[in-house]
Length: 212
Image (cartoon, rainbow, N blue to C red; front, side, top):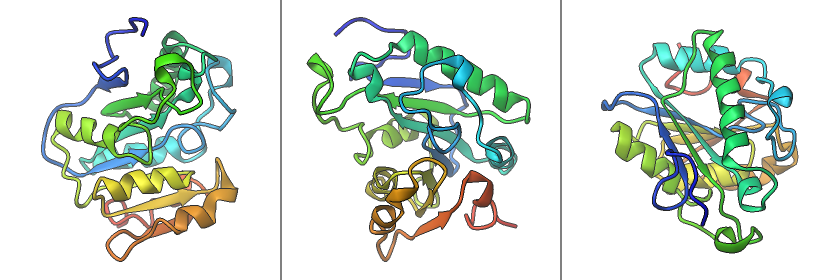
């Protein structure tokens, strides 16, 4: 496997830790379709656009003392559609756009593996959602308290990752892949509720960590 940026860990996964280690719950967020507009394999800075409400929601989580962690499957890297340099450029744009709202993320984890990807990337991986590996990497680095933490995603695999990591619950938003709502709701269990919202703009009143 080609050597990538310094953020690539020994598993071949992007793990960028930006916040300080402290015991606190986290708001885990999928990226495409949740924080930024879904463009299908986003890798162009000029197409990177925050979804309305993303900056405000993340800024609120910051003020509440939560860790905010992006956990994103990026099979486009594994498929050879773009590289880590393009991913990093998009991330830099997202960070800048969030900063305009006084918002920031504490960690970014991105998994390039997919069974249909190329070469060494062409397999399932413990970090590829719905597997919980990315959430656990961030937890180990930041000291996250998983039990009260929540995840927001636009796919059922996001909900599965949250459930498999032992989170309190998940919210499926329809701003990315709305047709997956039923599959996302099916990930709910007695100890893992899955709620629905139109977008990240609507989660501030329904996630206990954010609601007044």
